Each structure stands twice: as structure tokens, then as C-alpha cells.
Amino acid sequence: MKIKLSAVIITFNEEKNIKRCLTSLAKVADEIIVVDSFSTDRTEEICSEFNCDFRTNPFEGHIQQKNFALQQASNDFILSLDADEELSEALIISILEVKENWNHDAYYFNRLSSYCGKFFPHGSWYPDQKIRLFDRNHAKWGGTNPHDKIILSSNSKKFLKGDLFHYTYHTIEEHIRQINYFSGIAAKAAYDQGKRFNVFKLIFKPFWRFFRDYFLKHGFLGGYRGLTICLLTAVETYLKIIKLWELERAEKIKSHT
Image 1 (cartoon, one colour):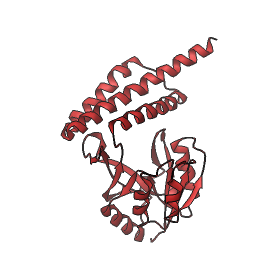
Image 2 (tube, rainbow, N blue to C red):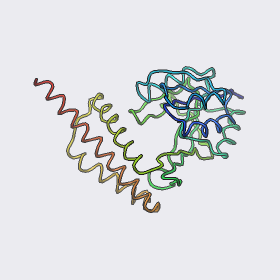
Image 3 (cartoon, helix red, strand yellow):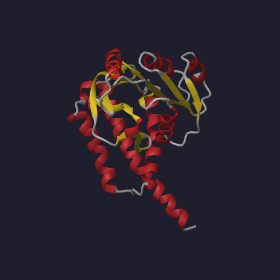
Image 4 (cartoon, one colour):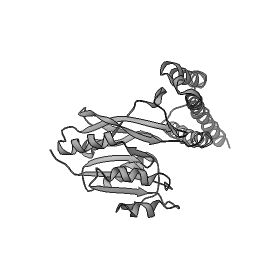
């Protein structure tokens, strides 16, 4: 079955990334929908160069915003990217072939991330398989903010050749800032879901995350980048748990005043 494809992206102050993303999407998409949470940089201006359908919507969470974006598309067949992602030439070819013969509810592929200017095909970062091409009648965004994922209502999916390039942190300082931000969001989401602090997890999970990523998944092959990524990932795991404890403590103090 030949289909028409809608590409959807959510943005906020993405002037450094969005042009690269849109350039790749223009090669496969029949329309491009950008849902922006009121950027103050040149994001909208750059999107206008690609004739995007640019809309604004208040940001209530990554999952909520991405599900809102899905509903703005004219077509049921969706390619959903983040602004800091780009289709490789091999993946573009695979997607064009699928457009001519769509026969699954979803398609997934490997994501290859860069770190401090160099791609990192090691540790838990690769192959980082993602479902990003799907029929929205059988899929929606779920997971736990800020780590969203596609939830399928069927098992009809197929792997595609080609990498999705992901341009992550340009500096270690940027990585540390994002860890602090994301760990807070994750702790709040966990608290709202009824999860509670556990001292065993605080001690064990960060250690296990580092050991798994650095040794079992060969993060050590990435040199200083591998060591830095694996250490900071363990730190992020620790922060999620200790921030959950902070939320519990704050709620207890509040209930006794």
C-alpha cells in the first residue's frame, strides 16, 4: 500500500538543530508539522524556510506534547523525530521504500548518538532502537516523562536499515545541566505514579548501571567519552532516586504543618 507521510516534531528554542532535522525530513515527508512551546529564538523563522505547518501549544510534558502533535497531522502515517535528530541517507532510502509498500503498523531503527562532537556506537547508547515510523491508529506516546516511547496496540512492526543520527551534548557541562533537569522531571513523574524511595535502589542501581554500560556493553571502547557517559548516566540514576526522597520528605513536612 502506497501512503502519504506526515513528519511531526516538537520544539523549544531549537535554532541550533532544527534546520538539519528539517533538511532530512523534506526528502521523505509529504507534510511537516512543528508544534512549538513558544520559542524565543529563530526556530519559527527557520521552520518557515521549509514551508512547515508551525503551531504553538503550551508544554505540559514530552509525552503530552508529542501526542498533541500526532493529532495535528493530516495523514495517519507518522514519522516522529526530535529536533536534534536527523535521518541518515541509508534510513531515507529505507523510508522511501516503505512509503511505496506499507505493510506493518510500525517500523523501528537504530539511533546513533554523538557526544562532544563524535558519534558513540558503544555502551547502552547503541544500538538504541526506536519506533519512530508508525500508523497513529495503532500507536501513541507513553512511558514516563521525560523518557517517552511509542506504545503499540499490536505486534506488527519491522526493522529498517539505516541509522537515525542523534546530536546530543556538545559539552560535558551541557550534559551535566541536562542530567539535573531530567532527573528532576523523572523523580516527579515517579512520585506521581506512587513510587517511593528505597535505600537499596539508591546504593545498588547507580553502581549496576555503570557496571552494565561500561563493562558488559563495552562503553570502555569509547575512551574518555565512554567513561564520562557511563559515569554521568550512573549519577543521573542516583539523582532520580535521591530527588524522589526529597519529594517524599517535602510532602511529609507539609503534612505536619
